[in-house]
Image (tube, rainbow, N blue to C red):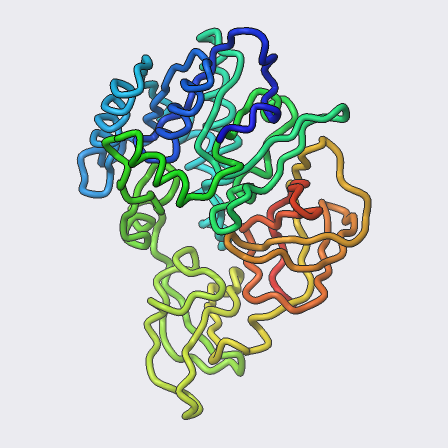
Length: 371
């Protein structure tokens, strides 16, 4: 159930909480839990994507209908708000700039910081809310020194990685009712409540854009710039359509088949040389070009507002990865991480997120390719 001790709201006073409702089961259960605890709850549905809104990959209309159905069952008011302009300006434009530069950004990280916990938070405060709540699997712990962001107790669903850019001001106004729960509990509770979307499939697409063929989608916004595909020894084995359409560690969709040395190992994207527009591929998951024990990160953002002391921590270089032991050091443009064990396919543009046990300290954008 909801851990009220993690709330920034004085529990002895009536309070208004605006819940970000997506039409999914997590945000629906979040709204129900808060209503059961006696909060005045308002549901807010965010529409943040308008291009090809009627395509098979954009489910905003059905999502809105699900939100309305859930709100009616729970007995709360709900409204829709359009943040499409903010999303395009603050998130999607940066998303395209990063891909154009040959990096692989994580739009969900930026979307959380700029839309879900900024534009949405501002709108909720204008409605007179004391706090906002979302269906993220994470926890906020309030202490004398500030608010800490903690992993969700369900390790398989923990979403603190995507929330690492939130500030003290944002976290102070946020509630995460599902942080203490397992996803299986949430599904079971949704069934017991009789929510109409209790068995709705979780969304796995790009934040607000949906689950669509990614290369086809990206090709609508970025030009194709063909160039050579080479092996580590410099042999040309094919042609790529543009470096923006490939990411380090990628195995499928390279367009190169067969085996160069007869061992039958798969090909992986290993490096991207922007200056020569060359895509380098290496054979075998264990190829040395695909591993590194070091990374540099820029554009750092720390939950406490200040960089942690240099020392030993855990870190993730991608979502759903176990924390890897590392040493954090200050660097000229951000910070550096030195890992105890080699990490596979460290990818520029992705987020390196630092942890002290269950506490998410913050992170930055990976800037250097593996050496």
